[in-house]
Each structure stands twice: as structure tokens, then as C-alpha cells.
Image (cartoon, rainbow, N blue to C red; front, side, top):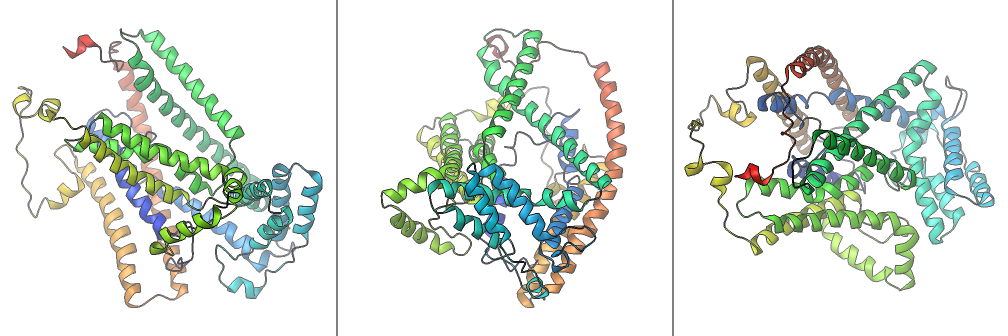
Length: 524
């Protein structure tokens, strides 16, 4: 698990990390479904919800890593190469069973399917002590013979390439549940499935409400010229929620996922985030931004991501065969290799009959660059002076009741408070939380776990065994401690705040006119 040993890793390499970091900054306010960007009792509580959100993911990341380690060890260890182990099943049997289930879904022709399964069963068991100690890679690992057998048996037609692409994607995606379902005891497996269902419901209902409320408030509501009755407003919101849910269901039934799950979520989110980030950033923090720039950002950013998604979905079956028939494969391959050669091995583009040569992280990066450029160019080409002070009620347009507070000067004593964002609204408990998040995220994770270890390895590279100890401490032990503390903390705080929520709702004075509409009479 040496993180420096990723030079030949094609997809999840250092460039993917750079894109993730850039996207997290540019799209900080662009993600609709962020559960820390909803409503709060006060603006300060809303801000604190965002700070507390940094503590809630430690336990989940640790559990995901543990599941990954369980699957990797079981599927690559010679201790489980034969069924005479405590689980009474071998990793070879799991690969064969998983392949049979996937091929039953992917290949309609029974004769072809039987031939492929027969070739898979001919693959010898090669997991020994020597192969266990030898390093594995993305291109050469215990699953490689299975991919080769399916690829060679299916042939090289467009339909065969598409079938192989589906097989390989489903094989990689379903390996974890295939292993867990056979090695977990009955009670633990039931608890795990219950947890998955609970997470599914709690995630999907939030996403459906976020999508439907956004459509209702930002798309449907402005179509009404007069005040919308409350009953009709709620009815339309419910119908929109049902429509979004039905749309999700239909797409999930007919949409074939042909890439790593992380890659798939990246490209799907990029359809929105590719254009949303610059609109949020420049719309709030620039004087030149306007509607034309926003449309340019959406068209170029989201359009690039959507085009990339379409190319990925139709590459093996439709696009590559057309290019092959018209003799364009070699010229395009030379072009892609020339363009990507300065960035090798981080970015390495070449024509592939099965997979689109540009991966989801690279498409996401291109969409962000085009979106930022489109927003700036489009805004400047149609720039008209705008009175920003009037919009923000500053200077001559400041509200007379608002007392203007002089900015607090920077000093040695308050430099950290200003960097962290601590203001006078922060209580002692809020300050402790803010400083703890800063200490854990910046001092510990970036300063110690990242920068210090990077400098150490530049001077004196670690042996491989040290990385195992490092990951055990930083990815298992520390997150487990943080997870236990945050679980107890959030449980007590959640019960307290849930009780206060119902008390506030009972005392709330409803205003039917406060429904998000801005009518012409309201602007006067």
C-alpha cells in the first residue's frame, strides 16, 4: 500500500487527487445535496453545521476501508485458495460464481454464454505463497486471467466489446457483495444489509427532496405571475417529488453502468458541477459576472461532461466501430498520444476498442477549465457596469438601521481565529469545535500525515512495511477513536436538537406569503 508506487496506475493516480482537490474548492457551494447547506435556526448555527460536518465521516471511511481490506485479502491470499478454510469456499469459486451470474445478465446467447463459462472454469488456480508476496498491479492481478478469457472468447465485434465492458464493470462492482455474502455470519450479514437499506433510504429521500424542491422553487414557481396558494404549492411540490423518484427509477432500470463506481459518480456529478462552480464563485465574488457568462459556463462545463458521459456509454458499441470503419483510429491515436505525452504517466491517452480513452476525472477537469474560461470570456464580452453597492446595501445604499462595524485589525493573537473564521457569535463550545476541526484537518492530516511524511520520504524513502503501520494508525486506529467520540457526541446532541426542533416548530408563526416568490409588488 505504498502511495508512491502508483506511477503506472492509470485511473486513480495523483492527477485524480489534484482534480478532486480543485473540484472541492471550485464547487464548494455548488453541490445541491450537501446536508450541511440546508436551513438552520440562525446563520451562525448554519455555519457550525458545516464545521460539524467535518467530524461525521471518519467512521464511515474507516468501515469502507475495512471492507476493502477484507475483500483484497480474501481474494488474493493463498490461505483462501482452497475451500478447506473456515468459510468453506475458495476465492476461485467466488470468481467463478460471480462470473456466471454476470454473464447470465450480459450475454443473451446461451451457447456463447456456456462457452465463456467453460473457458473460465479452465483457468488454473495460481494463488501460491510466491504470487501472494509478489506485487500486483492494475494490469496484472489474480482477476486478469478472467478478463482475458472473457475478452478472447467473445471475440472482437462491437457487440462483444460492449458485452466485455459490461462484464468487467459488473465484476469489479459486485466483488465486495459477492465476498461479504459468503463469509459474513448470518447475524452480521443481516445487520450489514439493514445498514445498507437505511443508508439508501436516508440518502435517496434527501436527494429526491433536494432535486424536487430546486425544480419547484427555481423553475416552476417563477412561471406563476400571481401569488401561489399554499395548497397548490404543496401539491406541486409533492407531484415534483414523485416525478423525480419515477425518473430515478426509470434511469436506474435502463442505464448500464460501464465504469468504476467512483468514476461513474464523478462524471455524473460533473454534469452539474462542471458548470455550477464558476457560476457560484464569480456570481458572488466578481464585479464582471453576468447572465451571459453563466450560460457560457453551463453550456461549456456541463455540456462537456454530458458529452463525455455519452462517449463513455456508446464508445465500444457505436463510436469506436464508426471510427474504425472510416480509418480514423490511427490518426486519433497519434493525436491523443501527442497531446497527453507531456503529462505521462499521470495522463496517458490512447485509442482503446473497449473503453473511452479519457477517464471521468480528466473529463471533469476539462469541463471545469472550459467552464471558468467560458464564464470569464462571456461576461467580459457582454460586460455592463453594475452597481454592486446597491445590490449589497453598502456605502450610500447601506440601511440606516445597520451599524457599520469597523473591520478588526489582524494581530498575532487573532490570526488563527481569522483564518478559521471565528467571530464574536462563537461560544466557548463553538471555539473548541472550530479549533479541533482546524487541528485535526490542517495540523494533523495535512501538516503531519501528509507534508511531514512527504518530506521524510524525499530524504529517506520508507520500506514497504512501514506503510502498513502508517495506514493502520492513520486510517484505522485514529478514525476509530474519532468515530467513537463523534458517535456519542452526535447522538446526545442530536437528541437534544431534535427535541428543540419540535418545540420551535410548535411555536412557529406561519407566514403563507413567505414561499420564495418575488412578485412585482414586492420589488417596489
